[in-house]
Structures are given as C-alpha cells and as structure tokens.
Length: 442
Image (cartoon, rainbow, N blue to C red):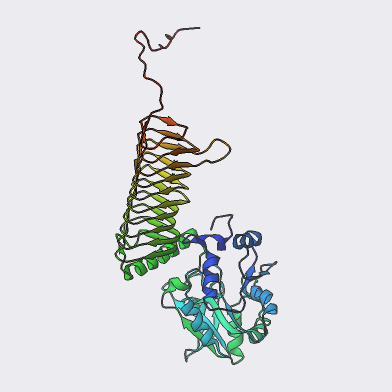
C-alpha cells in the first residue's frame, strides 16, 4: 500500500476495509466475532472504539494458520467457525451463508476463477473433481500455476475439528509460515468432505494489496450502488460518476447529476434534483427541492420546494422551511430559516433565527462571534435586509423592518420601520492621492 496506515484501515466508500468485513459477519447474527490483529494493532483497535468484537493479538506474525491458532482456544468447541479476511470488503452475506451451510461436518471454502490468478493459492482437485488441497503460488509447480480456480481465503468448519487440523499445520514452505490453506489438505486426507462454494463475481472475494486494487474495488462498490439506485427509479446522469459513502435513500423520480458524493445518512424526497459536483453529508431534503451545482450540504434539514446553490454551503445545524432560496456563495450555519425567505447572493447567516418571507441582500453577514462566544441574531417575519448589511449579534430585527444597504446594526430595531446606520457620505474637494517616491540612489 506504500502507506504508514495499516491496510485494513484504508477505506472503501468512506469506511475502513475491516468495517465492511465486520458488517458482513454481523449479518449472520453470530454469537461472537473475533478480530485477530497484528501489524498496527493499536491504530486498528483505536479506529473501532467500542465496537462489539473480541480482539485477539497475534504478537508474532507467522502466517494465516498461526492467526487462527491464536483465536481457536477462545471458541466453544461445538461452534461453527467462519474465517474471513479483513482486507476483502465486498463479500456478501449470501456467500457467507452458503459457506456455513456447506460446511456440515466437514469444511467449506470459498473459491473463484480468474484468467490470471498469479499470487493466489490454487485449488487442486482430483480426477473426480473433489478438492484435495490448496497450493500457494510461491510453492506451486508450473502445472499447478496453470490452474485458474483460486482459494479466496474464506472457510467454515466445526471449531473442534478445525483445531485438530490446524494443530498439524507445519511451516515447511517458501515463506516459513503456517498456512491456513494447509488445513484443507489435512482435512481432505483425514476423509472429511471439502466443499467449494464458488463466487460468480471475483470482485466479491477480492482482497486489497495495493492502491490500484483499492481503487478498482471502490469503483466496483460504487457501480453496484449506482445500479441499485437505477433499479429503484433514480435517474443517474452517469452510473460511473456517483459515490455513496453511507446510506442514501431516494423517493420517487429523484435525479442525480454527475460527480455527486453522498456521505452518512442522506434522504432525498420525491422529485428532488441534485446538480453536478455536489456533496451531501447527513442531509434530509423534502420533495421538489433542487440543489444546484457545486453545493456542499452537511447535517441539515431542507424543506420542500427549496432552491439551493449553485456554490452554496449549508453547515451543521441548518433547518430550512419550504420555498427557501439559498443562492450562490451563501453560507448558512446553525440557523433556522422560515418559509419563503431568500438569501440569493454572497451572504453569511450564522447562529440565526430567520422568519418567513425575509429577503437577505447580497453581502449581508451576521456577526455571530465576538472572539470568545457565539451570539444569535433574530430576524422576524417580512423583513428586508439591504445589501452589505452587518448585523452584530446579539440583535433582533423586528417584524417588517427595513434595513438600509450598508448599515451596521448593533441594536434591536422597531417593527415596520426603516433603519439606517452608516456614516454620512463626505466628499473632499482638494484631496489628492498619495504618490510613490521617485526611484533614486540612497
């Protein structure tokens, strides 16, 4: 990976590789989940906080078979054990259920076919097609390297029988490691049935060992999400140019343009339109709202029939009622804006309560921070805030107030009146601009 970050903490769809694997394991509702960790263990455990798994340290990294040896003593002997790899993020619960069912009293492994399985362990079968053993690429003979079926690293079996088989694993190989793959040959030699569950899509069982492989699986994941959205009726401009890094729920007739990113939990109501190059993070948008190009919305609730952008930003804590317009280069933070209100150009609204039918002129800002604490601005219904106004919080703009352009308002205003607070314009007739000194030697 050419990175100081432990491999399983690299991300697919905004979440660590290991998080995807744990989620797949949880879908089976297991009694326990064990995570065997070695390299970068402190970082890995810190990244997952209080997640409900049991951590097993592999202090000496002596191979995959050795890793299983560390965990098995903690596993109830009668349990069915499912072994997964922390760097295989796209595995589906259906595959895992098939593995568990196929194991029975024997052992089941996941396999797949590749035109070029270089680097992977090959599945060696006998003349009848029964699985006999797995041979690692480095130890394989030329005829074995020609095999296209490879072992995907997942297996299932009874804990007691696995413990007996893994105890017989030796490290007589090119890497001097205890291979988990040797368990398959040992089980077959003992007369146990070895079942192979073949993945139809190799990407489902593909691991990540390079930045390129990470990028390929990211696109595979996102393309699958895009197809899901299309199947549910969402209109995507390009199924290869959308990123879902969380949970995206769309109602009827939603349209999403190119290069949009959805993070956390996002819900889009009926007929919502998202323009190109937008980022939405933990956002709920009501029906018939349009978000125009290059807008960033975070932790916000947007009402029906709103118009956001282009180049707008909604920061955390924003709630917009219906028919609100937030225009180009307008930033809103920790504020509620009432129905029919508009801030169409170049404004900052922070820590504010804005009523209905308010017009906020271009260049208007709420001065919400005094260097030590945040203060709120209240703008009541039917106010008109002239361009380039500065509202110094805490302050209340009473219902129906008009604020003259260029005013600095630091006191509450009376309702229904025009308030102007700016210096008187003065022209100086004999004023001359300063001139640069002529260049000369000193």
